[in-house]
Structures are given as C-alpha cells and as structure tokens.
Amino acid sequence: MVESKTPVKLLKKEDNDMQVIQMVLHTKNYELSLNKNKCTGCGLCVEVCPKEAIQVTRTPKKANEKAQKPTVSFDENKCHYCGICQAICPFGALTLKINDKNASPVTDKDSFPQLLREIVIAQTKLDAKCLKIKDACPLDLIEVKKAGGKVVVEVDKDSCPGCRVCEAKFPDGAIHVNKVICGSLRIFNEKCPKGCHDCVDVCPIPEVLIVSKDGKVQVNETHCVYCGACKVACPEQDALELERLTIRHTEVKSGTWIKALEKVASTAAVTKELRKKTGKKLKESVINRMPPEVLEYEY
Ligand code: SF4
Ligand code: SF4
Ligand code: SF4
Image (cartoon, rainbow, N blue to C red; front, side, top):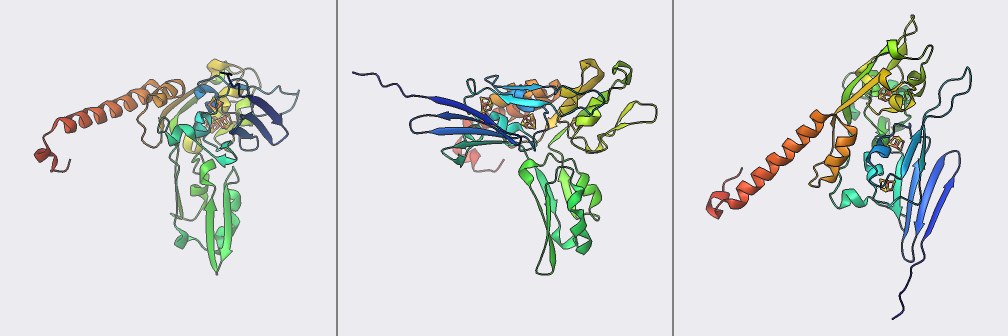
C-alpha cells in the first residue's frame, strides 16, 4: 500500500490594510485574515490562541510623535484555524474562511461562545437631525440613510465593542447599547515614565483617557470597552491595571472557554462562570434522575 502524503501549503501575505494567512490542502482551503484598520492591537486574541500563533508587539515610537497602536502578527506555521481568535475579537477584526465561506469551527461546535453584542435602535425616535449623527461612532460603524422619508440607522454590530458613545450622542432613548466587556481600569501616574501618554494615543475610544493640566492621565470609564490596547502599549507594566469582570457571551458547554477566561478575565469572573456551569450541571443531573411523572411539571 502506498501511503498518500497530502501536500500542505502554508502562505502569508500582508499589505497596509490586511494580513492574511492560508493553509491550502488538497480539498480544503483555510484562510484567516486580519483587518488592520479594525484591529486596535488589544491583544485579546493573543491571550486566547491555544497554539500561540499570534503575537502583539508595541510599535516603535518615533521621537516627538504619538504612539502607534500595537502590531499583531500571525504565524502561519502554528495556526490550526480553530477560529477562537475570531470569536473573542471585540472589534470584529478577524475573518476565518474555509473554502471561501465564512466559518467559525469553535462556535459551530459549541466549544467556544460568541460575544453578545446588544444594540437596540428605536427607529421611530429618529428624525432628520440624526442624519448628522453618523460621526458619533468613534469606530465608524454607523450608517445613517434616508429611505421613504424616514431615517434608518444601521450599525455594523459584529465590530461593535459597545463603547456607548453613540447612545450618549443620539436623542434620548433612540439607541441603546450594552458593553460586551465590563471591568475596571486604573492608572498609577506616579509609575508612568516622564511625559509618556502612550495609552492615551492608542486608545480607540476618545475621551476615555485624558491628559489633565498637570500632565497626569485621567480615566473616564463610562465609555471604556476594557479591550486592553492601552495595557499592551504601556511601557511600564505596573502603571496600568486592567481587570475584566464580565464578558457577555452566548451559553457554552465546553471547558475551552473557562481556560480562555482564566487568561483574559479576573478570578471573580472565572469563579462566577464555574458556579453557573456547576449549577446547571447539578440541575441537569437532578432532572435526569427524576421519575417521568415528576418531570411532567415544568422547572
Ligand atoms: S483581538 Fe484585539 S489584537 Fe486581536 S485582532 Fe482583534 S482587535 Fe486586533
Ligand atoms: S485560528 Fe486558532 S490557532 Fe489560528 S491564530 Fe486563531 S486562535 Fe490561534
Ligand atoms: S482605556 Fe479602555 S477602551 Fe481605551 S484602550 Fe484601554 S481598555 Fe481599551
């Protein structure tokens, strides 16, 4: 018997806007692409990748220039095209395709959740003034159109981390947004290198980090999405403390999510998730042991 060896081609290409890696097999073509314009360099994908196939590095800063967002790089030799990175990215910067079709192997198999993005738009509360509000989104995710005399607002939901800036700028109650990640962020200015405002330069949401008159960085968490780009860009790791306390996500049964959560969120968040899981398991096992006549009642 002749052992057949499938030739595997591993490819990588990059330009100013995109970075693409590919694994080409005999019958399957896997492709993972990074939209550099959407990526903030937050590093969440790096932390959850089970194959350590992603790196994020601080971008070198030129003298007297602002800090640039951190740079993300994929290793085409390590990636297994599981799609975990795509599922965790709060900014929707990653797209996985299998044979040219959008794919998400881990969420399809229920071994990783999807982020829950909640944006509710009350179209009836919108009027002509809203046409100007397109610029309200710092990530440029809002499309405002006039159709049949009505104003219609559309948001690119898959890329929205829920900063809630639009909610604050739209007329009362016209748009409601929930943050995907909640947490806490503290800056210890006494530990910051003199004159450094790198975190302020890279933060994708305006006015979350502000340099006050005395040169200190102030945090306004109202619109912070706890992505962590500031933490990656900070040259003094002890100067910035970021804790992710909750990540809104769809229900999931697998332990892969707990492992990921241990890397990116606080101990309290992991404990809460474990309790939820144990509670559900306990309930399931009690229900499984119940006689059928008892099960006729709803629980
Ligand atoms: S998770 Fe963060 S670093 Fe990774 S692709 Fe998305 S925005 Fe970029
Ligand atoms: S697809 Fe999976 S293995 Fe590849 S970079 Fe993303 S998380 Fe890592
Ligand atoms: S301040 Fe908040 S929104 Fe800005 S980079 Fe840091 S974690 Fe992200």
